[in-house]
Amino acid sequence: MKLGLIGEKLGHSLSPEIHQKIFEKLGICGTYNLLPIARMNLKDTVETLLESMDGFNVTIPYKTDIMPFLDEISPEARTIGAVNTVAVHDGKRYGYNTDYDGFARTLDKIAADVKGEKVFVMGHGGASRAVVQCLHDRGAGAILIVSRCPEAVDESFQEFAEKRDCLIIDYSILNQEDGYLLVNATPVGMYPKAGFSPVPAEVAERFDKVIDLIYNPSETKLLSDAMNADKSNGLYMLVMQAVRAEEIWLGHDIPEFVAMEIVEEMKQLQEERVEAERAKEKKAGL
Image 1 (cartoon, helix red, strand yellow):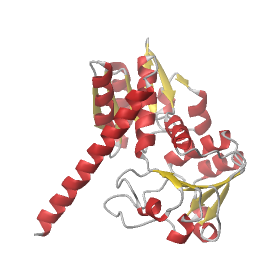
Image 2 (cartoon, rainbow, N blue to C red):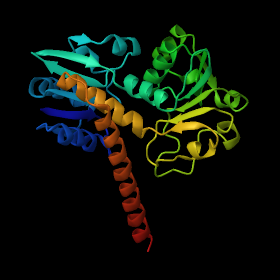
Image 3 (spheres, one colour):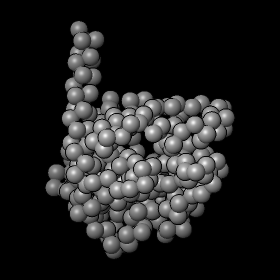
């Protein structure tokens, strides 16, 4: 099985390690490679990959750009307006959105029942679309999307939000509010700027449930500040969306215990990476 991840800048993605673990645990002979693509080369490269691979994941900034290359798009991906998983079966090209599944399972993990509740989503990038759609489908009472500059939010996202009766607000409003669930879909707090949070500590403390899509560091300042909340970082979502992608490619379910083993192993790997980075920085400082 020949798989991979396409995007513009892939950095230190954990995706190859996650998928390699799945191969090992299921006894599958497969490869999963990082495939950075410059925008100017997108069309030609994607056409080549669709002819030569069994499937691939898609990350920023191509989750929308990939859609015209596909023959069929799943209902949830079409509704969200983004594809992050492509499968090729019998010459046909299919698109899916497994970020939706990963976030749904994260809600279940922290026992977040959002029906009728007020929820806040910080950020309006690609990941926030899947988050908002999932919250909408689960009957959230009010979904407020928080932006540094609401008037600068692109038109397509504004239309997406309006169709789901979402309000786009700025942080000055969030800082005076409380609610049931707070989701961070921005990069604020990500390594190496791990000491920052999108909101003051007193805001984080007001929420019953908090999800940060960042997974490096494992406990962001936002999660640390949310002392009394049920909470999760983004690693669980990352693994679960990868598991769902593999289920699509393989055509069958992956046992729950396999997914949970991979979550724990990725936690350990992430901790080892962080320690290695710290040691490298310390050595450079000397």
